[in-house]
Length: 454
Image (tube, rainbow, N blue to C red; front, side, top):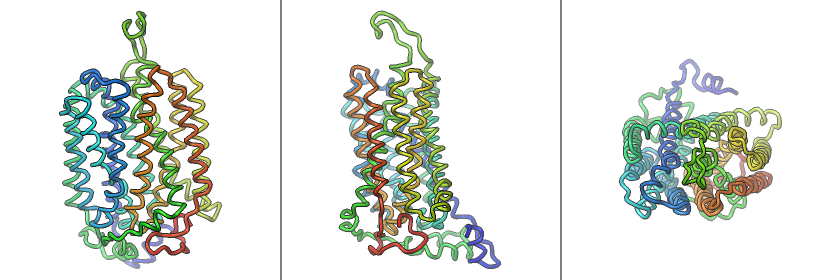
């Protein structure tokens, strides 16, 4: 039954309002702001490095500091959403990260940069888990994965266009001023969201009686729940598999938002005689390199968007949502691994970036599936459960830039791509055996059509 048919069957004469879709709009808007704030540092790093005198190893730790803070505070951020609701929690999250986005422009050296970027990461933690919790409350089961697809499309495309926008932005303002301006954007969103959003859609004046009736089954998700069944969460082998595959996905993905602009600059950018052993080299322009740096996230946006629709079509064919997701996860990660091997054996900049774009596309085909599993298995603890997955994923993001910083000391980037390809193979194996059978609500076996992974 389609959403429209559900609305007619549930509401009779009155047509349900569409207020719930504004939650998706708010989520996508903030995801775009978050990714611009997060990725700006990678393209501005050339200016930051020159002013602060950072080494490649130190740059790796700067990138890793953000991700460490982001990973460590994912579970607390998700738990706060489960306990107090997304409205208050997201307000705190966005105000915190906006402050430390601005504070990035105030740093005076390596140590203060590490401290600020760690705090910035800690502030951003919990955003996506709280969005998952909001989707559980505000959207129908048939709408949730599609909403995740649209969310990640907006996030990835914001990241895709950030490098070239930052190049132009830094022609107008300093890198310090750029971060202060970006910090203000998040603060504006936080105020507007807090005034509009309600943890229970039934409390929103824009939701009519028909839409309230439509969302009545979500009522149990709107109240706070702090007593998370930790033993069930941690002891489940399926939890460890969803964690592991997201760890490997993030390990690969973080290259695109940390070291990729540096890879392009060093490999294909212009070099002075002093930088290149006495021979000057005219390379690609900064604007063109910025466009190339956005290719993986641009392709990834398509992967996220297609994923939700592909899942529905495959499920119609297989008749089993669990099997659909296992097939989609396995095949997608193998495709990403092949694309990364191609990138490792290619020298033309356009060919390299097309290969990395396809690796990102295949990797992001798994994104809505991962968050869909977390929403449905987590139930009313979706914030905590998805936060745990995102924490483990971002631990991969902590490791990746630091390891890469040591690998590329001699400007040899080929091992980076091979290691990422191997990570994708391991992620594919995780999906092959991923077979969750219980919710966290009461530890009961899934039996209904809404079970995302049963």
